[in-house]
Structures are given as structure tokens and as C-alpha cells.
Length: 388
Image (tube, helix red, strand yellow):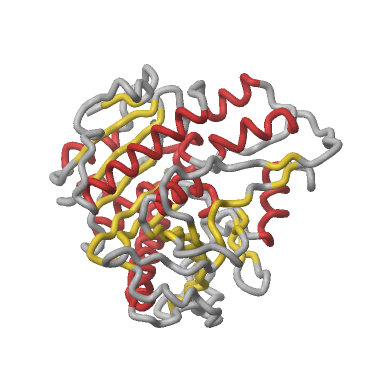
């Protein structure tokens, strides 16, 4: 379970210990999603002209990038999407200490602007919010899994508290929060992110009605209109993104259910809601429970459950869970250093459990499909501990 300090820190880096380049670059890969649907994806540039940017008051409007992931009707002629926006790759390499060209970042399993498969009455929606100093790419493993099982997932980059965000035309905005990362700054970030989330929900309503909300009016998949079931919307987030899910759920009744992946909470979020919420944390070890989760649990009067992923760390709830072990031999990381970063649990077991329990939660509360996974511990998942 993340403490308040760890939940506010930068995500663990893919940091080389030995700096020597490899003879040939190594391609990193993401695990394939398990659902029956092929995937499409498209990014949108959204501008909220009702807000001056709260982190950069020289900008007269709040700008966001979001990425939609969805079941695709067909993928032929639509190239696979990169894991990370190309213009941000040099920033990522520099910040992580990766020599340029040493690693080839993954390609996703989604196809750019592929036509949307609506399903029978539109797709249930899940919003994704990354951690502080993180970006939407870091949640791709979970996002693709949900989309492959019929969800329309909307990943949000929170500009200026993200490490880097690329906008159309190649402009890249980087982390701009100044001062100590204390409760006051986190409270402001949560308020900004909550407003971001509510604005994105407004834009989804417009997209579903057939309006192109992209600031450059770039072509969207022609079948996007009508693809959203706005009566079934949930939210998922890691670290500060998990706190964002809880805060947004309190602020907007359009959100029906939420998951916090290992993120500490602040008041008033700790007072809970009347809607379902899952606390899903890293290995608590021998230490005490995060007191903010205790306060939330007492006050949460909707459906609730708390799980722990045994043998994991805070970073295990990001794509670094699978990418770091692949990169380690190239970058000179020892097995003990990899374990320190992502825990002792085998990556495939960590990812399998996260995917299945996250999907079981949204299936139960957005689709009314109960596979009973959240009712009691399962012998199939010894890595999952039911805390309460």
C-alpha cells in the first residue's frame, strides 16, 4: 500500500545502472489483452475555454489530451498505435536515463482510428487517470484489457502535473508544478483533476451526439457517434489518479463506480460516497494500513472492498511491471534492483490478477455481471489478499 509520500512521488524509473549501449536496440512488448475484441484508438485535443489554466496562468484556457480505446469493427488499413506519443519519447528517455536508441518502446495492440464496434446499445465507459508525474501511456496494459472485453476507455493526461504531454503539431508540455509536494499542492491538483474529469465527461456527451470536439477538428472514426453508453460510466486511477477517481465520484453523479489503485486520499475524499468503490493496494507488508484508507472505509456507505496484491509495489500498477524486467538486462539492472522496483511477484501473475479483479469490479457495477470474484478469496489468485 502506498503511503502519502510514495503516492506523490514520481513513478519508479527504468534507470540504467550500467551505461553501455547494446549492439542492437531491444524491442519492449506489452502482454496481449485477453478479450475477444480487436482494438481501436484515437487521441483528441480538448480545450476548456471556461478555465484559465490553473498551473500556467499565461494560458487563457485549460488544454488536455485524451485517448479513446474501444472495440473495433475492423482494423485493416489502420496501423498499430505506439505506446507513447512519438514527440514525448526523447523526454521519457532523458528523464529515465535511457540512452537514445537502446530500447524500442512498445507498440500497442490498438489500431489508429479504426471504426468503432458499438455493440448493441453503446459501450460502458471507464475513465483512466494516471499518477502525479505520470501520463496516460503507463496504464495501457489495464486499458487494453478492458477495451478488449467491450469497454470504451478514456485515458486522460492532466497537463502540467504529467511528466510530458504532446499536443498536435509537436508541442510538448512538461511537468510545471513548483514548490513542495505537500497536502495543499495535492489538494489543488485533485481539484484541477476533478474539473478536468467533469469537462471530459461533457465532451463525451458531445462526441456521442456526433460533434467533433477535437480542437483541430481532426477526423474522428466515422462510427464514434452513438458508441458511448453514458448511463454506465466508471473511473479508474493509479496513485494520485486513484484519489482523482474518488474525488470525481464525489463531485459528479454521472460516475457510477470507481477504483483507486494504491493511491492515498485526502479530505474530503475520505468521507466516501454512496456508489461502489474498490481500494486495490500494493503489498501492505508488516506495517499499518494507510490511515486515509481507514478513514475512507469507515465513511464509505456504498459497496466497498479492499484488496492487496501480495509481492507487489506501488509501481506494479503501471506498465513498468512488465516493461522493467524486459529492459533490465539491457540497462544493467540486477534482479534485486528489479524486485525492489516492482516486488517479488512474477509480472505475469501481477498483471493477470490486476486485469481480472479490475474487470470483475466494472462488470459487476456497470454491467450487472457477477463472476463472484469479489465476494471471497479465490484459490486461483493466491496473490490477492482480501483485507476487508
